[in-house]
Amino acid sequence: MGMVWAMSSLNVALPLLTAVVSFAMAGMVLDQWRQRRRSFQLVWGVGLVFYGIGAGVEFLGAFGWNEALYRLWYLFGALLVAAYLGAGTVYLLYRTRFGYFAAFAVFAGWLFAPASQARLVQEGHPTAWANVWLVVGVSTLAAIVIAYATARHRRQAAHVVMAILAAASVLAAVLVATAWLEPPGYALDPVTKVPVGSAVPGYLRVMTGPYNIAGGFCLVFGAVYSLVAALASRRLSSRVPALVLIAIGGFIPGLTSGLDRFGVTWSFYLGQLLGVCLIFAGFLISEEVFARLPWPRRRGPIAPTTV
Image 1 (tube, rainbow, N blue to C red):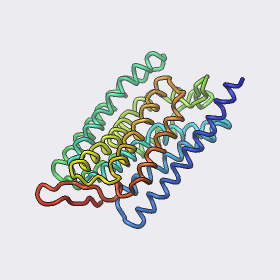
Image 2 (cartoon, rainbow, N blue to C red; image 1 turned 60 degrees about the vertical axis):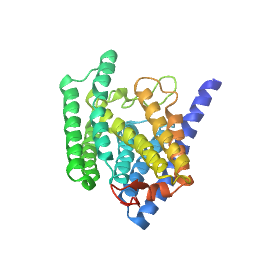
Image 3 (cartoon, helix red, strand yellow; image 1 turned 180 degrees about the horizontal axis):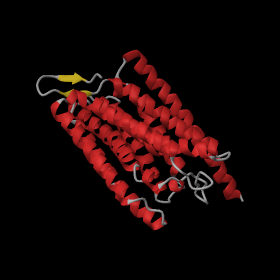
Image 4 (cartoon, helix red, strand yellow; image 1 turned 30 degrees about the vertical axis):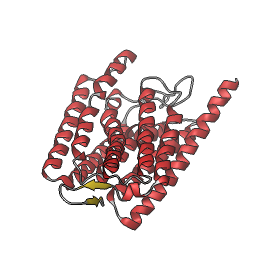
């Protein structure tokens, strides 16, 4: 009985704290965008708002899940958050060749589709293999387009990523809103009461890789890429610990979210909270990380990045 009470309390406290931190950070980043009009700040701000919405839905769900909450949770929590945070990083690094990595990350995202299908086969509810190969084909095409844009018009590559993500977001919203859900319209882990995706049709579950893997890779390795550049420039100041915190903060929720999809749910809410707190800590340590990172030009002195 005591363990059940403790689990219920955590299911209320952890998402609530995550939502508060996410909205607080979103407000600060969007305020920076209002003052400086840098694209990455706007996209990151939107991603953090989505982070807060997903966590807020989980908080409300602790008092009773329903179909509407579950659909919101799947759209924002399972699909869009990591994708928008990763797209913001692509905007931050638009002057570099990071677009090639973004293309690779989108391409790698399709690898989750066959793995997810294998999981669905084990559960006895596989989707049609045509849906799996459609995800593979679309992800591969998107990766080729992003790589081509990076090669031919590097400064436009981030806009291409955003256009693809916007179209994918509309598609995801329509599919989530119209999907038939297994009764009672949501699914929870029987022990932890954490939401899981098993009530969602298989064609939606195989789609999560290109959103989450691509977004998570761009966020984490974008921080690592920036860290290497900061070390190379020898302008360290507070950038190094800030970028380390951002990289770890991006990695943890990606890991726990992936575990949730494969039945390991106890760490899901904790991973979300730790992730956003570490990213927020990196932001507070050094705001300049978001506004002025050093990138070596092909010739000449170090130039600050502006978007």
